[in-house]
Length: 86
Image (cartoon, rainbow, N blue to C red; front, top):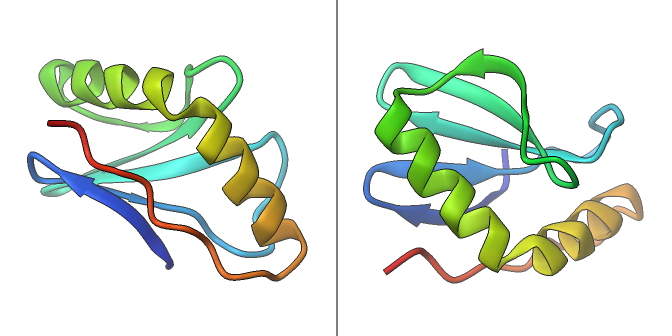
């Protein structure tokens, strides 16, 4: 699981060879979720409301970088780190 960002206890990752639609994975304590890059909607799993709000705030700021990493993963290229939410 290539980690691409970490902030406030939330770990963001993308998998190589993951299924469509384009998405990323978030881990927060015992919780985990898959979030669509284009819609920022929950695809699978669950996160506490505050963690989800921080995650969406971060994803809005870094959507282009998330898209780029999704494309890099499809090509088997190394993923780039994305700045955390501050």
